[in-house]
Image (cartoon, one colour):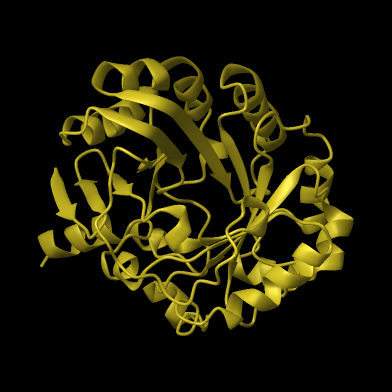
Length: 323
């Protein structure tokens, strides 16, 4: 096990288990989020790094698979390969390792993102772990006022169990966690051709995702999320999105595409997204005018320099061992 210290937390690199997982603090929503519906109206033109406080918000991002089979054009994770699903015990090991290696014993909010390496809907162990294990495991180590698990999915077309997984997760969100859990669909574009390129033709079409969205129960607590990782070239048509999805059921989250090696190699413009709100405003304002709740999340440069994106620390460790 190797621990890589970052500006906001730690990356755990376990080459034996083929797992990589991350713990970070948060800069505070007033520093890196614009969301008019939450009363956060300041445009974010770059995020200044500052010391984070895990007692306010603590985020654990864990791998649900050992590598990833999706092969997205903007992600470096495919370079690692794919070695199957993480077991319930292995996901517990990831969370337990994160909790044991901090001195913090209480936090207002402990978020668990099933969003590091892997596509979580391919792994039914995610459902069992979140429903039956996560809260008891966290309670062994810290007192958390809120435990908030989030599934982020790229909606793989090859997953014959996708619909059932998503519906099962909605029940966990709405019933087991009484609304205090999240579901995020990675959309990235309202143009199917652009999506097909980004997701290497492995994600459902927008029409198919829309049909799935119409099957979901009304969300308890916070709405479901449509995530758009954008560059200035992204197609995000507010009218088209409103045709496909219900703003009463979903919010839109806008983030930049991270500056990964693959993103640069495959021609994504990742050079202007951090410091210039103009990149975000062109997407945000038409959506707000059409009644959407929109969150614009802006990371700091430090987060990219820390290899905070999926698989990078594990790939670097493997490369170093094989030199």
